[in-house]
Length: 234
Image 1 (cartoon, one colour):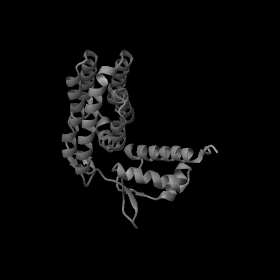
Image 2 (cartoon, rainbow, N blue to C red; image 1 turned 60 degrees about the vertical axis):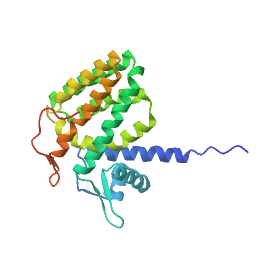
Image 3 (cartoon, rainbow, N blue to C red; image 1 turned 120 degrees about the horizontal axis):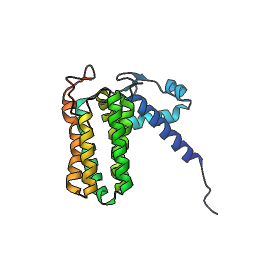
């Protein structure tokens, strides 16, 4: 007898992923603030789902360092922790370097054009002081070589650790303080177009390394960054 086709697990997985994405974005954009208590029943009512996918999403968010959960105690939105952010930054920088190394020989003219267009939107968002649009454009820019590399392991790691960094970057993208990244992006596209694998990978890594001073200046009790400079964000 043929194995029956079950659709429920697939639907449940899609629902769980959607809940995870919505909660992740709410944490990144500040709708859910650091230290805020998260009650699965309230979140389920807010999102219009049952408590099961919310609980599953919270487990994923905990693995990504976005929430803190202790057995028998409440779950809260994680504060910006410098040590955890340094670890995430190191991993994300390394994965983007690897992705660019693998992507350069595979990038097409259309990919390079899309990267330039995304960088233009990124620059425009910075000028407007629109952090959400800046993050979306930056995600699109870096996502093009990641997708071209077609490395599922790198994509999985980036999916897990990038959101924690985006929370920090949002503080910077509300001003012109990410503008140096526009020039770095331009360099990266040109090096990809030239087929210079080593130099392109180095520039990709550099864009994420510029987060280190920002993390080091983090005032953890207040969750703010002291002395924001104009040249330290990807």
